[in-house]
Amino acid sequence: MFWDKKSSPAVSQVDWREFPGCFERHLQRRSNNLLFPIERRNISADELRQARAKDDASQKEFAKLYGVLFSEANRFNESTAINDLSKCLQDTQNLLELGAQIGGDLGKETAVLEILESKLIDALNSKLPQGTDMLRQAHSLSVMARIPCLAQSKRSDTPIMKDEELPAILSEDLESIRTFGFVSRSFPDFKPNGEDVKRCLEEAVRNGLDTDYAKEVLEAWNSQM
Image (cartoon, rainbow, N blue to C red; front, side, top):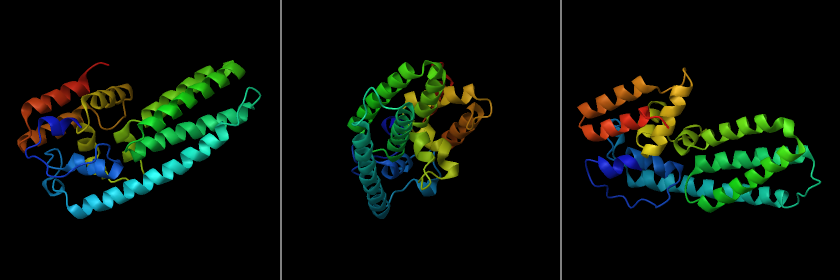
């Protein structure tokens, strides 16, 4: 989490989890963060308890789906039909996107799913070479959907309020901010755009945000990948 390392005006007293889930992660973003409205910067113990309960429930649901997927995938072999491979690939990519929405300590599961995804794509390319470009495009869209902050904002029960989407993005690490900036410039109608970012940072600076931090974030957004 980039902003907390460089610009937090106060040392947080919350004992955050090393790998927070979606709901706790947004509390981290808000805590003492001048990018957010003043009434959203204080985190209560009750908020934290509720967030962790929701995150724990999400982790359990992910574990069930993960087990079901591999019980199916383990039956595949060289004679598996294209339709079955395609469905498994879609299920794998959906689960990877769900993992990004959930957050938490899913690094090992994500790595295994990415290996499975690669094997399924290779198998489909071998059986149906004319579909290579379509598979590549689908993979690119899925990878974009796995950017944690973006994925978490798309949850039906997301803790990220509509007017907090930009502050949430700008509270991420520099690499993620660069990625969002690149995506924004790649699609003319994408929101937020560079002007939105500039206005958000200027307002936060007026409220006391460190100017060097704001400059670093803006440079990351505008940088070429």
